[in-house]
Image (cartoon, rainbow, N blue to C red; front, side, top):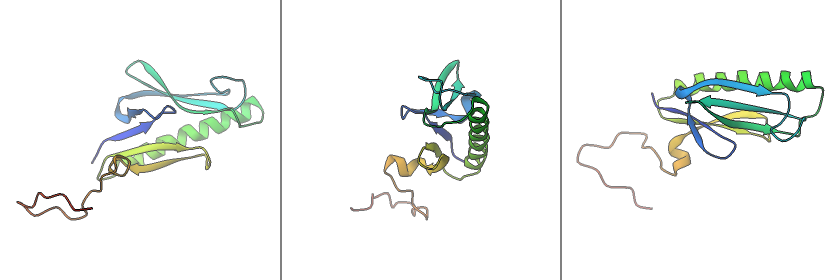
Length: 125
């Protein structure tokens, strides 16, 4: 199994196994509208979602933020079962968490079949 990383709003990465808390707020970081979700790792808070576009009552927004937290936990559990390292990113357009192999983000393709010993050449192209 590979490592699991969570992408922050600033496109940084936080190792999921170092996260000690995931917290939600009924307002975005800058306004009393929408909601925000942060992860705390090694004593530092990382903003994962800051959505000031979500309208509704404070309780409704907080309920939505809670569902997004639960979806993140499910995504982390699913990513932990993957054979390769995975990155979990928030997709605002779909209001969902997306799992992507870290090799895809790095621009490297992982061979589907292990290379034969002695064959250490990179593919052309």
